[in-house]
Length: 240
Image 1: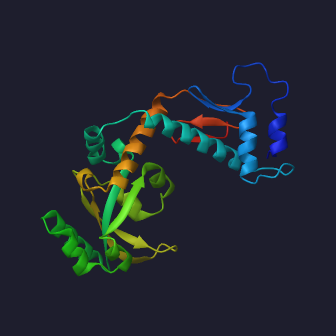
Image 2: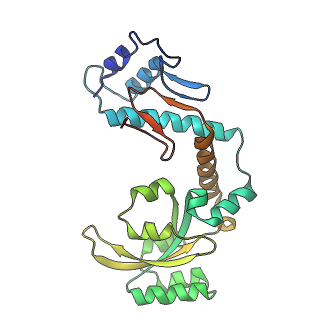
Image 3: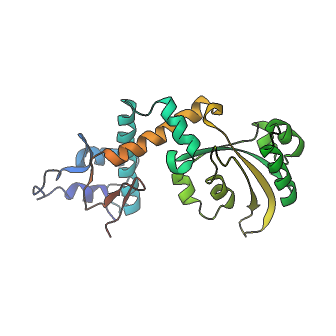
């Protein structure tokens, strides 16, 4: 663990490499030791008590993410390319947006899914079959799920099923399980194509695509005293 004072002390006698006074760098943008101390103090970090290493790494990860997002603002994927990547599925775009209808039984879910594949109107099925009032209030919109969220939800069945959806595979069903793993309902999941996304959803999709591209191209440095940057996950992780 490191305190803010200890972080400051790490600069002493460290002039052997070009980034010695930088906690992190993304291309030409740098997070200096002084700037990092200010950030931690603004967050209320104590000056004389240990800080969990994971909290320090999380703060550095957040700064790197801001720099990558700022780089996206200067240019990025156009709408046609974003649509093509998004409709191909989460592995291509990093995001999937889905609608859902909650029903009680598996057979009901399968029947509703078959109806949707045959061209039934989603809104009509939602009104007729849905048991979840919160979904009914928003037209069945479950929201958009990013690949990072999918990676963190490996034990949530409906999220893993949603991750398989695309324009070519737009409909599937999943059980809903409680914390003990007991089935209590089923959900019919429907992929929302790019041309049906809200402006906010489009922003989420394009930002995720652009950030992934920036991750692949950006020159990212993290002082090894704090860890290393994992471009696959976009996280600062401990040195192995």
